[in-house]
Image (tube, rainbow, N blue to C red):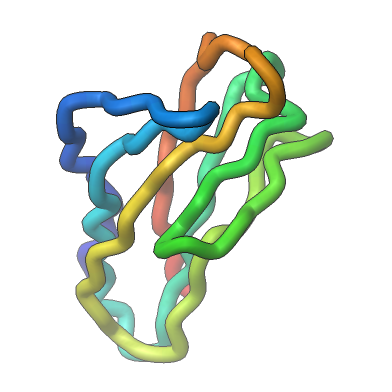
Length: 100
């Protein structure tokens, strides 16, 4: 079984508190599916990760599921980070795929 998540970054652009991060490329050949999780540093709590335009709130436990599939798949998703107010984007994000 092979499962992976990589981010193809673009030139970071920030407009009105939103930073375009690039594209998440997810792949897993597990026949019963997989989940994709983002792990983030504490200083990103309170921000919002936009995944294909859908808001995922980063708060509390420093890890949140951002997608799921009930079968093997390969997908690309657009990523952006929405920052409240004039907050700076100091922190880190990492993505992982978990077979189910």
